[in-house]
Length: 149
Image (cartoon, rainbow, N blue to C red; front, side):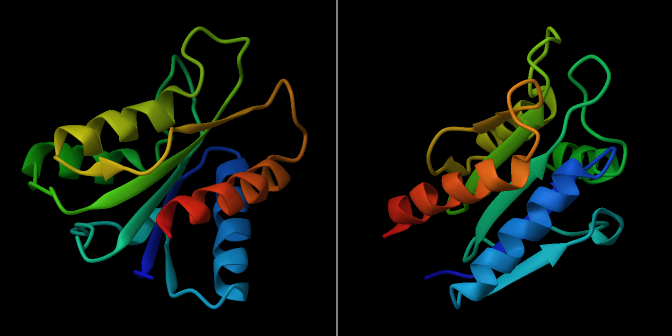
């Protein structure tokens, strides 16, 4: 299986915790995975030979977390064409807000515009329905990995 690059954006730590949980589980399964810290994303363009796993919370009016905005803008401005990149999105949000999981959906739209191919649907985790987003993400991960085989 391809190496997995895991990128996250987080405001209060939930998305970071989900990303770290997914990272550990992927490692436990013997897969090659790299967890990218938001502050290390400057100049990073995903390798099309890898799988990209994006995890993002949502803030404000459906906005991306501040710690991932510089990378998002960099990718949008440079607009690399990534037709061979496969990716997935785990979006965290609160369904009591109008733009539920808006941060994750913005990332999905961007990578779709860059020509990348999403594997599976955007996985939405609702803070109104779960207190343990990590467990929801682990359940999703099992299903997502089956799509890759």
